[in-house]
Length: 443
Image (cartoon, rainbow, N blue to C red; front, side):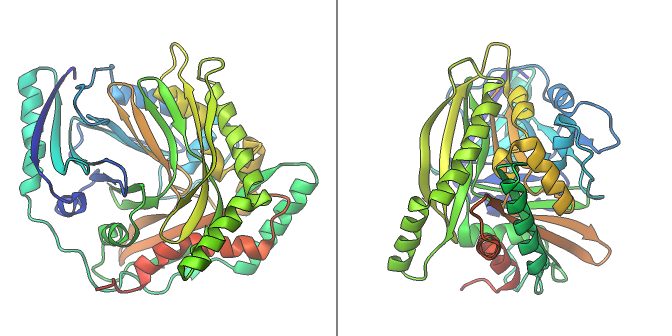
């Protein structure tokens, strides 16, 4: 698909456009809160679903789905068509054989190739329709088809409560799990493990997963907010965390470790932020994962190119403050974005260190995660890639009576962790998602 065509249109809100086809299988929205570009896609040319029983190598299958490399238009958005995919946490079992159990509903990998997309330029306040084709005529036809998506009548977001009270997993059991991990750290088995707990419930009659996505965008849009509709499944994510980015061979990852809730007034908020910045425990937790990600990147990056240009930066979101570090590198000759994805999956910030042993600890203490702590990614025909860590994410499963919902939140456990404090951290992290589900929207 060497030819690229681009057509522009006046600004529209991405969620408004997506609402018209959000119920279609393989409809996808990558809607950034704060960055320049958002993307919508539908009607893929080809799809790929790999479950545990499928023996194919997932990264080889992704490479086949993506197809031959093709250049991007120099004046276009970073993503100009290619593959959008969901890598569930248990895809890790294809990287390191651990015998991880799976959720019944969710595949290890679900991906699709899109030859037409809409790119939303928040900076220039315009929409760009991008089409790919074997010749310019075919590319222009696909760009025009994407442009026509803007003509569909939008669906107004639901204003009622989206779900009844969510059922959290047993807090005492979670605190006991944290205490067990601390004991295993003190025994020298691991240095850190990210342990999560679940909240489950059901959408109200008539409510749809897209309603949750639209509400999260309105209330607390995150940098990697995303919506993906699959047959009988839907993913709604409001993730603040980048996993891997590749642009012209340059690599970046931005692990998050260290959290405090937002304060009720400016003084309390500033005090909590200062407390996080000064916390030896949180800085150590973050540094362990930075070292892990440096090692993961070094597997496919040129020798000596891996750097840490930013360590322990404070970033503030609707409900929490986080410590965010940045690790960069340059892909070695012969290595590409999918090689990087294989080398670094699953994200170190949601496993622990050492990664493999931490994953074994997690598997003994949690039920299968499914999409939670996996990654939603796009891979361009030109070799570019961007991806999120699927935290602050709801996994929605269609049932005979409507939609079941599961969301999880975790905490990085280190030797200095206190079980009650870690449980409270999970509750701060899940708060925006719970509020969006169980409360009426603010007028």
